[in-house]
Structure formats: structure tokens, C-alpha cells
Length: 287
Image 1 (tube, one colour):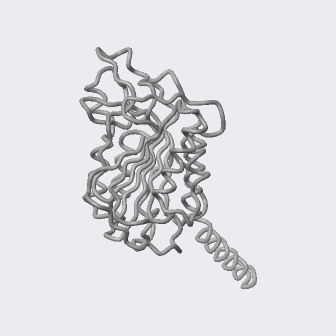
Image 2: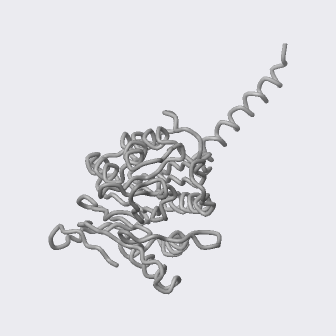
């Protein structure tokens, strides 16, 4: 039988451990391959949510993407510093991606701001764009449509969720690693059409292919991380990112910014978002 003194010490250590775990959980990056569990749900009143997915190791593709792992981790930490609740996943199957998207939708509210990032391979088929999970086995365009995750459907789901502001960063304009298996060739992504009050940053324009440079991060994420100043409005951040990539690559890579935003949004929650309604609702694309 333990003495009362030892029992008290055990209880005290248990409480300190629980308090420490609770304090650290929002700042400690989740294992990116770990499944999202119901008890990982952020508070329902959290208005700034992000889903970051980086697929770098494709068993059925010949070219790994080592930069994607570092890009995903760096962006995750930057978003958390800006007050976002982030679910970060690396090397994710189709089931894992769809579950993560469903998990995100369940937490969105009418005043929420949501940001989705995908880094990996993207393939267009019949004018639609698909994000490729790591367990995809692609031998035809039909496999792309059946095993990929549609970008257009994802953006539509975010719109239907009622989120106030929808942001997306798509880093998937790479050469199709399966193109020799197809009857026809398709390079890069098809045009992306964001719904209302959305802003999309893509690593390249329609039909353009980005070559991954040597270095710690991709050109897009290097520039984006440098531009993510809390005081800057998000359109400015994305446009400055585009311009920085164009300058760094001497025009070899030209990201595209697509906007239907009707109000301003700052990365820092301390900034006051004053409505800044734009004329019309047409998509504005910058090349």
C-alpha cells in the first residue's frame, strides 16, 4: 500500500503532465501521416481553419517530390503562427484525403475563413483537375477521374459549407508522371474557376508545367513564406508571391492568382477586416 505522501506526489505529477499536454497540443505539429481522430477537433468557434496536404512519395510514379515534405511543414507552422487551426497530412491516400476534407467541412461555420493547400501531383482530365493521392494506380484518364480528388468539387464543397472566405494554394502543376500510359498528353492543370468570395494561388497557369528546382523549398512556397506578413491583405500576399516567383525564375515560372473576393482579409486576426466590395463578380486572373 502506497503512503499518502507518495500518492499525493503521483497525483501532482499526473496533473502537471495533463496540463503540459493540453498547452502544447495546438503548437505541436501532428504527424502528417496520422489519421484525423474525432478528439482532434478544434473548438467549433475557431474561425480560421486550414487543411495542408503534401504528397511527396508516390509508389506508382517515378519521381519523388522531396521538397513537398519541407513545404508542407513550413507552411503548417507559418499558418499556426498566424492563428489558424491546421490539420496537416503527408503522403495521404484517397480515403485519408476525403476524410480530412469531410473533417474540415464539419468544423466550418458561416463566419469561418478556410485555407486549403495541396502539394503533389495534379492531373487534368476532360477539363477538370484532380489531386492525386499516393495510393493511386494510374493507367488511363479514367483512373485519374476515379482515383483522384477533384479540385473543382473540393472548392464547391467549401462554398456549400458556408465558409465566409475561401483560400486555396495549389502546387500541383507538374509534368504528368503517368503520361506515357495515356493515349493523349496533357500538361499542367486546366483552368481553375473559384466560386464566389474565394482566392486561389496556383503554381502555374493553365497548361504550364513547373520544374522542381534544387533547394530547401519550392519557388512558390519560398516566396509565399516570405510574403506572409500579418499586416498584409491576403490578395497582396498572393500577388506579391506571384511577382517574386516570376522575378526569381526570370519568367520561367508564372503563378496565377484567381480572385472573386468581395472583402478584405488579413492573415493576422488582430487586423480589422473592413468590407471592400469589388465591382462585379467575374473571376480576375493575373498572369
